[in-house]
Length: 187
Image (tube, rainbow, N blue to C red):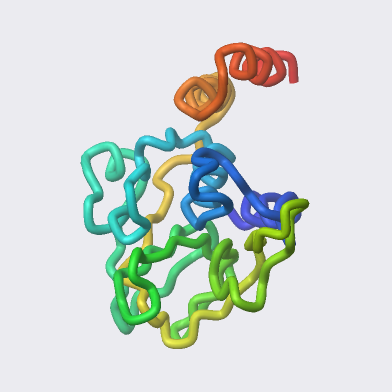
């Protein structure tokens, strides 16, 4: 898993990820969707209206692909775990991020998008503040209610099928989806 998170970070560090909903540009959920796509996990396993609901409204499909591990004084998140943040002062819709494999009992260290957008953003062509992905230290696991630990890393044809399903379920017009699927099949 550490190799996978390293490759994911290398592909997205200091970049913005827009995976699904252009009305909510570069949200933490976009990073989560991209992580699920990377692992071959269907987005529907974590798709919720607000980030805190990824944990609070976890369903059978979520549990099919992830173990839910509550944040306790002795549980430490691991590389590839999805950190789920509850609603607390300053985080009214929650937050999600991906553990980079350097967390310890005192601090969660994760790869985040849309965290502290006051300081970590770039401007797009229209002058909009666009948050980018970067490593964040969450002291004392502040706000973290628990972790989603991926259960499986799919192999071979299952990975391809999951990636194709992610394209089919994702945003975009039919032509773009077919083009993306052709690229997946031919790669």
